[in-house]
Image 1 (tube, rainbow, N blue to C red):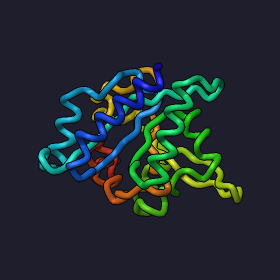
Image 2 (image 1 turned 45 degrees about the vertical axis):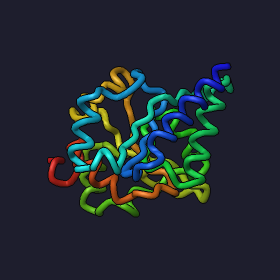
Image 3 (image 1 turned 30 degrees about the vertical axis):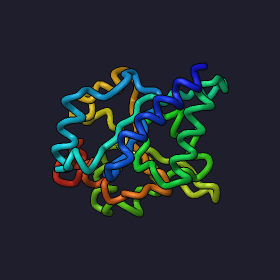
Length: 193
């Protein structure tokens, strides 16, 4: 019954957004809140200068994954994430470290050094804000950014006692928007000291 309700809510949400262009789609896993603070969402939409009648930014924090147990919520959340990645509808994943490790073991995330400037990667590394994982070939790559230092992200209310990491799935359709999101979160080249 829980799975039916979850998929039903996803279906209704998807139908309402179907007529609008997806500018950015973010999956937030194991969040401590059911949704971002409305002010955060509003400021993000203003920053991207979207036309709300034609475009949408989705921040979905309904995902719950327990890597120790395969309960109904974990299975439903995992299946939805995998489906979104396969059909190229997920731009960004935000999650705690254990979830990043779980997905990284399958080469799920983009090497951030391939989409961010060398300077930004160096600054993030200097501030210990990069999260690394090994590829299936054994190469260690930066796959995520620690968001705990972003006051702007803290304003979202999504995490308060867990360190959140931002990663880009390999099939993300709007990889260029990670730079814009980092700018919004004040974690881009101009914001990092």
